[in-house]
Length: 400
Image 1 (spheres, rainbow, N blue to C red):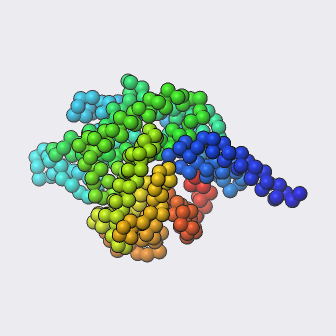
Image 2 (cartoon, rainbow, N blue to C red):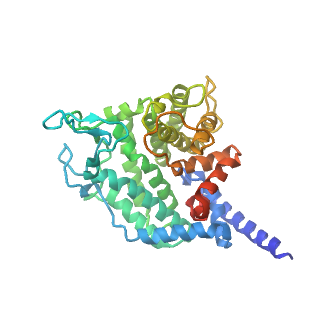
Image 3 (cartoon, rainbow, N blue to C red):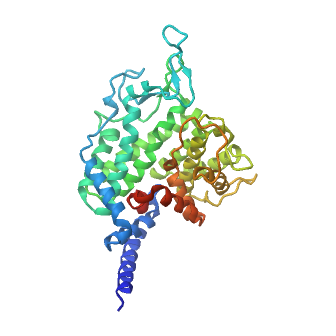
């Protein structure tokens, strides 16, 4: 038998076996990631598919380094939030600065697009996104390698931030994105925890690990159920829910991921419907987003809001509405906005709105990849390959 045919049959058999295992696990065993795609990529790696090995080796190298990453918690910050309880998360608004016209600098004033370095004094805002990214990468490394050491460390990171009584974060953002001299916390602070979406994908990948116990998972689900309740019922949460720009969309993306994790299907369906209403109201007839165009980094924020809609679209496949194919009553759609914005991101067209900082196209990679596969448009993936050049084979997106 031809050697190429033999290898193809071998890979096909491996894929078939892994996909059958995925069916047993069911589609609800993931959050944002496509588990069927992961299963196929894992089978290809087991067959030593050279096209994926470099990305896999890069992931494992990163995960090995992350084993030295010590657990962090909200207790690490030096300053206390207004509650006097370090278990409460706290951050300050990034674009607000001391007023030079006032002796004490209060109240702070806004400088859009200019980050006040004072934000780094509050370690919660810095630690939490890194934590979620590290959990995500460690869990992916565990999934693809079956090496329990990665799951063990990811589990420890989760326990310290969310579960252990001495170190866990209280399930609220009452003091998120505070503005000194103005408010102790704002609805805008909810966007700080958008990275929870990635951590929850990591949690799902730990399901088969002995290090992530059923008791751990129940405790985490309880934490997120409380947090979701806070999002839906608190004054600050409702302020963000009603935001008319990217903040409202990111609220929905985060709430949707959490609702799916805690098995609230009815709420998940409601959130997708609300996101469709946002798309209808926020996008103009060209598919662009006027509120984002007003920003000093308007291309960045146009891609940023689409990244949130992209996550909603991915998650919607576990609900009664497919956001990828949805069209609103006024003719708006996710695909229309993709086709309106991505040509600027990949430099097919010149962006004419304000952009005071260089736009980093890598911020659009996830959107480009998903748009390429969902809408059968190779130019988006081709651009990633062109832009990444020799580093393309190392990119994690090759495994996703």
